[in-house]
Amino acid sequence: MNVYDGERMAELLAAEGLAAAADGEDADLVVLNTCHIREKAAEKVFSEVGRLRREDGSRPMVAVAGCVAQAEGAEIHRRTADVDIVVGPQAYHRLPELVAAAAAGHRAVDTDMPADSKFGALPGRARRRAPSAFLTVQEGCDKFCTYCVVPYTRGAEVSRPWAQILDEAKALVDAGAREITLLGQNVNAWEDGGRGLHHLIEALAALPALARIRYTTSHPNDMQDGLIAAHRDIDKLMPFLHLPVQSGSDRILRAMNRSHSVKSYLTLLDRVRAARPDIAISGDYIVGFPGETEADFAATLAVVRAVGHAQAFSFKYSPRPGTPAATMADQVSPAVMDDRLRRLQALIGEQQHAFNRASVGARTSVLLERKGRHPGQLIGKSPWLQSVVVDSGAIGDLIEVEIAAAGPNSLTGVVPGRAAA
Image 1: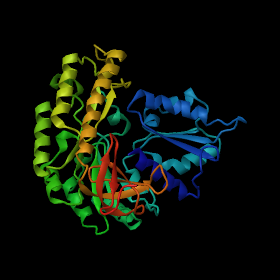
Image 2 (image 1 turned 180 degrees about the vertical axis):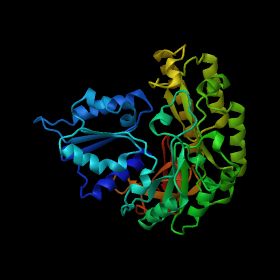
Image 3 (image 1 turned 135 degrees about the vertical axis):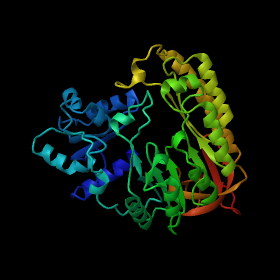
């Protein structure tokens, strides 16, 4: 979602006559688009601001945008004199007027969450050639997990209107996008006039030039029957599902206010796999949540083994100011969290490598997205979101390849009838 917001801010500034600079050294304005989910990400903002000061003592105009801006507000100005603009994720459509205010010598702050959606104030999508595009359809969260700042920094759940999404999707496809990933904090909570995410996916699938559709991130409680059926019925919907569970312990899930149990989560995955047997499952896990015992962590490892992931993201619990979990008793020590994260990531890594190895010898489609590390190499994505390295084709091509080799993080593909380089 931050990638999407960054693109939209760049388009907004381009509409005002600004052009992209090669790097911070050349820039008149640097916009730092930020995340507040974890403490280290927030602290990176201030170290990055310091690095923007040049050897001669000058610096570009600096705007801090995104969730750190929303959470910290004017406190950012109190911590450093090197930030000119602070703008939250729901107010970045006002960036041009904030830049004008900063140019006039004012330190500008806008962390409002206006009733009118920012999307209606943004310019039309810029012409682009990238084969894969992000499209935000839903923002905010009403779940209030006890560890999470999203409801406070992104606000309540809001769904973008049907027509607005389809117009933006058509613009992206007309500009060369062959794959669209629908985004939201709880993307499967999207609804408009009684229509759910599966109706939206069905409408997008009718765009002839759009080859692939994905969505992320979902909440287990919003996984509707229609969306599960869409994985069975809509060929353009890729066989990949990112569905966070966060812990394998029901006791910890209750403390997290996750509103689902381990059993309900695993039962849901069984239903998804029954609809689409080849679907790849991704997830999120937090280790070291307050009160987590070794038995609770063992239950998480058991869930990971039961799921069998194509990939997964795992994190140490990070206390966020203002969230209920930050003041809970029995905070887990950093050393224990480090050990548990190491063991969890080792298991997830084994599963990811096994998933990749199972692809060897299979034929699959790959959407080529960017150049590889070596001359002549291109990198694309399989339907299961695996990175595939090939030595033929052009960026934007959707080609058929045979998987010749698999590593922990990528695959090697060859066009059938050609030997691997």
